[in-house]
Image (cartoon, rainbow over all chains, first blue to last red; front, side, top):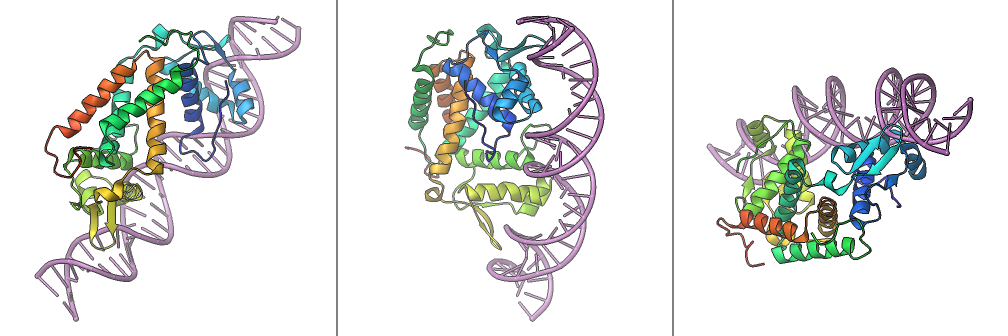
Length: 136
Length: 136
DNA sequence: TAACTGTTATATTATATATATAACAAGAAA
DNA sequence: TTTCTTGTTATATATATAATATAACAGTTA
């Protein structure tokens, strides 16, 4: 999977790495048990420091998306391990709250937001999906 | 309108101020043309520095939510002035993308996300709404 | 044995956040 | 007119975060 770093982004580099790995899992490009590049390999590919990659990996591990073994490397966690927990629900609840608040302020209706959600789901799920992310 | 600052939050103080003002507008607590406390007044109320308040106000002005006049103070911008533009659409599109990606990774269905959107809209719009934020 | 793994430690640089204090200029109110 | 209030600008300081660089460590794998 290919990750693009935008040095002009308002998001820190390790967050861009984190986000794009989550997108990769959602797209089915990264499957449970699949191995990710080593921190040195990924850093070298992206032209960034290994500690920056490590910071993104560590956050993903804390959030349940990855499993890190000191010598075996980094793999995508099994689905059971990344189930929705209270931390996730609080976090996504806050994000949705702000998206909706901004939408209301800008005169964007619930139907428009719902359509955007639907379209976004489709962009993630249209392709091949062999990791059990369908039929939920 | 009452703003609460959480010094332990992962969000900077000026962002908390910004977010809660947007929530206030969405809730109808803050109406178009309504005046906000001066930077000094708000800072004093919250026990923070006036520059921190100013930073939040400035961002909201840039985003079209507020209008700032050098001597007259700060007012909520009229609805026409805070219509959805390309910057907003790109920004909210990215936020929605990440919310959906995380949801898919955690086995949360489109229907569940849609329901959360609906419930969030209701929490904002159930009360009085006299600022034209209905029927969109 | 040699190469590779994430980890830890130390150091440095740059940027972001938050505060403190002072002064400015223009509008509003007395 | 004088006084007060407004956001703004400037300067300075402190702290936290982000990113990099370099080196070494301890197991795993080849």
